[in-house]
Length: 219
Image 1 (cartoon, rainbow, N blue to C red):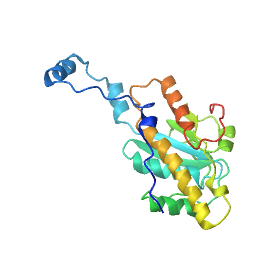
Image 2: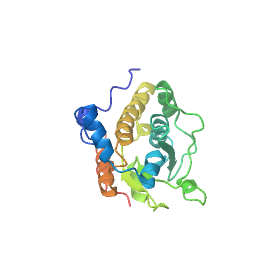
Image 3: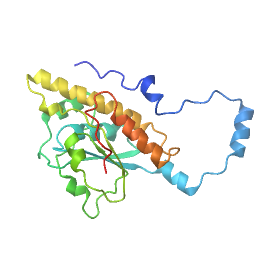
Image 4: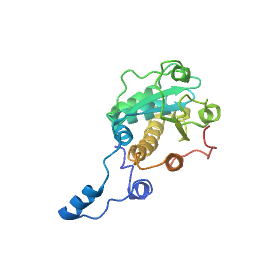
C-alpha cells in the first residue's frame, strides 16, 4: 500500500496558521521580551491544558474511530481523543483497524459505543465535538459545558462495495481526509483565537477536500 501523501501543504496551512515573523537581532528580541507583560494564570492554564475532543458518527465503527486514533497519536500531550455513535454497531470495522495499523496508529482498546456514555454524570467534559457523518450532525444533542462544534462530514468508507482491495482503498482515502483535517486542527493557534474565530476555522476545516454536502452548523 502506498504511504499517505503529504496532507498539509502551504495552500491549506497558510489559511489557518499565521506565518512566522522575519528574524530579529538579539537586541530587538531582548527589548521585545522586556516590554511583554507576564502571562496571566488563565493564559498559562490555556497553554498547558489538554483539550477533550469527541468525534461522532452514526455507527462509531469507521470514520469516528479513525479520527480518534489519529488525534490520539498526532495530538498526544495536547488533546484527549474520544469517539462515539448515535446508533453504535457494537464492533469496529476490521478495515479501519487494518489501515490504522498499517500507518502506525493505535487500535488497542477501541470499541464501538453510544454517545450516551459521554452525556452521563462523571463523563469527561468536552471542549470540541466534531461530527464526521451527515446523519450524526442532524441528530447531534446539546452537550454539557457548551463545547465548540463543527461538521467534518466525509463519505462512509464502510458503505463501499466491491473487492477487499476496493474496500481497503476507501478506508485509506477516509484516513487521508481525516488526517488532513486533524493536522490543521492541532496546529491552530488556540490561545490567540477568540471563540468566534476558532469556530470559523473549524467550519473551514470541515469544507476541505472530501467534504460531503454542506450542512448547517451543529447546534
